[in-house]
Image (cartoon, rainbow over the protein chains, first blue to last red):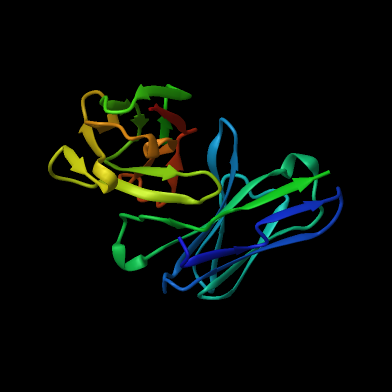
Length: 115
Length: 115
């Protein structure tokens, strides 16, 4: 979905390096999410934010941090990357006015490789 | 705790034949159920959702899904498969009974449609 963009699309880094993945959206949604996708495991939630002042841990937040710089921007950081953080990372958004139905709209993903 | 299972890693079907991709779920309350599709090098795209009402839900690209409360299933179906339907399909569930918001994704089923 072109309304949700992620940068970079691909990144190769070394163990111990700090990495930031960025997500921007033009959908006007207030809720934003970060997931990682691993083969055979589906998507797992790392962090989510319901508005600029609301940040919450997901099921696998260890080793990650986030920043919600504005309603449209949500960044994911790996403070000290390790090889088992090699994965495909997705940003997603949803609209609070949709209530609890929470249909999510995904960015194209960032493929991260940690050597 | 809520969970979702997709028992098949891969489904193979000939073009023109009907297809079914299976999904079962476990929640403590009433579920919201979703299907998403992921094409190569793309993020997930919303296909359809069940919130309440008619057990048969129609979605994008001719797909439909049937909610079966007694069997706790939400199988994705299409009467006539196309080669272009080949993709990775994810079932997801949100348990509204617990008041939580998190959407849990299954591991995904790869659909391969042969011409």
